[in-house]
Every structure is written in C-alpha cells, then in structure tokens.
Length: 493
Image 1 (cartoon, rainbow, N blue to C red):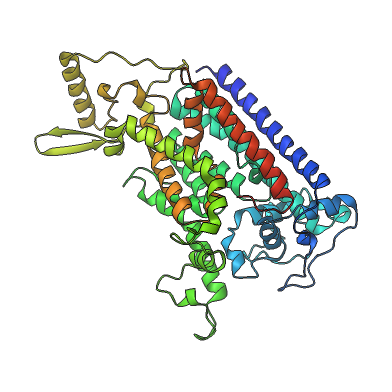
Image 2 (cartoon, one colour):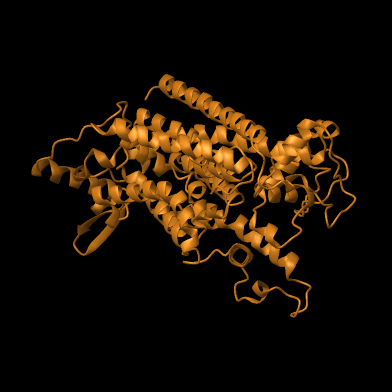
C-alpha cells in the first residue's frame, strides 16, 4: 500500500467523519425544532452541594437555552460532574476522563468548584486548554460546559475514525476493505452518542488508537492509550496484550479504573460509622461500580429477562445479530485457529512450543483481495517446517505456516482478527445476559470486528449488493431514529 493511497484514504475518512458529525448536528437541531421534548427538565441546574458559591450563572438568550436543553440523559451527569465534582454515589458510575476534558476546556481561571481530583489547576499548564472560557460571559458557565462536551466528543470521533482506518489496514491487509469498514464506522448506528456529551468517542479514540500502537510495536504508547481508555468507560479494562510478556502492561491498563474505585471508597466509606456505611463498603471486595450498576440501574445476570423488556431486545437485535453472525462465521471458517487461540503448536519429541504470529512477519498486500496459494508439496512443507524450527531456535518470530493459507494473512479471517472476535464474544454475552440490552447498540459500536465483517459481507460475490443495502438501511434508520428520540429526551439505547 503506497503512502499516497493511505493519505488519500485517510483524508476521505476524515472528510466523511466530519460530514457525519455535521449531519448529526443538523438532524438534532431539526428534531428539536419540530418536536417537543418528552422531559423538559434539562435546563434545571441546582447549586453545587459542596460549593454553593461556585459559578452557576446562565444567560437568557436562545443559544444558551438551546445548548442547555440539549443536555439530556447521561449528559446531565457528565456536565454536572465537570461543574460540581462527584457529589452523589450514583455519579461514580461515570468515569472521570470526559468530565475532566470538559472542565479543562471551560476553565476560566476564576474560583470554581473542585472536580474532586485534587488538581491544582491554577498552577497547572493544563489551564492553557481553557480555550472556551471567554464564552462564559456570553452564554453562561453551564452552557459552555455543555459546549465543551460537544467539542470533545466530536473532535475525538474524528481522530478515532482515522485510527480506525489505520488499524483496519494493518489487520486486514486490504485498503479497500479497511476503507469500507471505516466509512461504516463514520455512520455507525450509535452515531448520536458519538456526537453527544457521552464517553463513547473518547473511549473509541484511545481504545482503537491503543490497539493501533500495540500492533505497530509501540507498546508503551499503547499501554498509555489503553489505560486512558479505562478512564472513559469501564470496558476499557478488557484490553489485553500477549500473555506473560504483556502481563505488567495489562496491570497498568487496569490501574486507572481501580484507582477510581479506591477514590470512591475513600470519599464514601472512610470516616463513617459501620451503621452509616453503604452496603458495598462492607463487602470483601468493595467495588463501587458494580454496586451502583446493580442497585440503581438493576444491572445483573438475567435481571433484564422480562416480558416487558421485549421491545428493548428488539431494539438491540440488529447489532446483536450482526455481532453473533460475525463470531459464528469466523469460528466456523477457522476452527483450528480458534481452538489454538492464534498459536501454532508444533511437536518436537515431547515438547510443545506455542509460537505467536507477530504482525511484522506478514507481508503487506496492495490488492483488494488475496489469492489462496496452492497447497505446498511435502518436500516444500518439510523444508518450511525446518526453516520455522531454525528461526524459533534462534529466538526470532516464526513465520506463518502455509497450511493456514492466505486467509490467515489478510482479510476478515486473518489470525489478527481473532483477539477482536474473542473480545467481541465477551462483550456480546455481557450485553445480552447482564446489561440493559438496549445499550448494546452503543456498547458494541466501538468493536472493530463488527465493521470488518460488515465490510466483508458488502464485498462478497453475488450477495454483496444486497448486504450493502441492508447494512446501510440499518445504519441510516438508527441515525435518524437516534437523533430524533435521543435529542428529545425519549428512550433510545
């Protein structure tokens, strides 16, 4: 793949990602103008509990009102945390990365309520990020906080789309398939959440970016990105490196999430009498996040399996069906690969040596599709086996065995897609059996293998055009439905 093709594709993705965000913004404004919201309490903003004297002022102008009225659903929590810190037990369900970014963009340098991170923002160089602070005198503080949230989410999405393309090219070895998958990501069914004050965009940026750097060999940068992703969403801690050599890096990825739980325990449990302590404080492992999800939102194994929740299961059925089909197809097509978990074991006497397939050993392909080589002769196979064994003895990475064919080298059936399939399988099981199932659309929306499989279907001979119509109809319907319902405070995923 030439640098010119890569640059042209990345430019195209950036333009389409920008277009998709402008489309969502236009639809949101249109639906808000045409329909009355189900809940009109978005503009309510009580004083901060810990610091009632902190800036609370709003401006009575149409733009300020429109911005504040757009703070709905979980956006209320993110903006409130950025403004007042973690005041309530429920607010600890929302991780600190997005509120911190909002706070930094809106910081005025004046007396403001603590974000409860113990940051000395008055002396920190991060105060230079307060580029939206001058707008406070025009629109009011809360409106600027909300505006900062929109800026963070949309800019993060643009960057996430570029990293998504880079990762897709690296994994699939097929620029055209990577381009199709990236376009689908730009117009994914959960698009409304990537343009709202939600953590989806930041999580996608740092998780996909982290995986890109991981596959590029920049392990330290990858660990930092994946660790930051776990400050955006709890599922960020599911990212994994190769066993043993990546164990310490995996621990680093968990640290931000664990530290946030320790912070919640310090604030809500320490210094209280046993009678006044919350139930989770007395647990053997006092994990605040799990308690909040179960106690306030009823999240738990099979708790959502009720007849009245059938419409929500129907709402989530397209994304779950696509995910399940992608997993089944991969497992059916590559049973040996899945069984060996991506490791090629070869026997020498009584010794078995698992040999991972590093990305650097696979040649890049400039074509949109790879051809499957003919089965090697016995002589050639023995010679290749001896070469692999010699390379392994010298401590170098083993090359891909020929018996797997080019499907392991490139495309959706590549060996490098396997970790994404395993990760997606866990996510699907969690979404279906444990979570509020309607959240599956946005919960799974940052999983690259979904878009790779959809891209694969759209290019399949004979049925590709039909699949293309169905997939784009699904994305279009959910973009329209999501922008209409979500922006007017109606339930949507």
